[in-house]
Length: 160
Image (cartoon, rainbow, N blue to C red; front, side, top):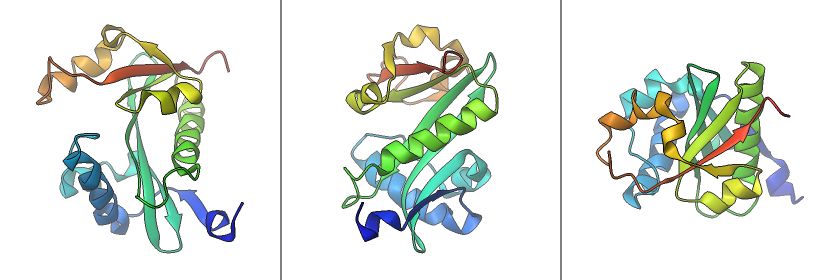
């Protein structure tokens, strides 16, 4: 591991980190890889996030949202250009999975365009219809509903 990579920490963010999270998500939402988030929305949901920090810089983020039925969702995964391919996304996801387990989630899923990343982490493709908690609480309000072309992937946490 290089000195640069060893200085990266995965931590819970502070409110002061919200603009940096928004900047990361804006970059990927312009490419239609993640859904856009407003700064007020990020501030309201700051507790769902983990951030990758190098010094004072936020260089990655991921959100973890819980639903009824023991279901958790990974959302808003983003790593700053120049830091991709260094395992930061994997570390963020691993922290979110550990938190989901701590909270007693039985299954964790993501809706994604980077399916292979999640498959390498042990997730499997599933049918979105297996996620009614997500579809009928959030997806119905999305501009892409009902024509979402993201893949659904999930990892069973009860078997680990």
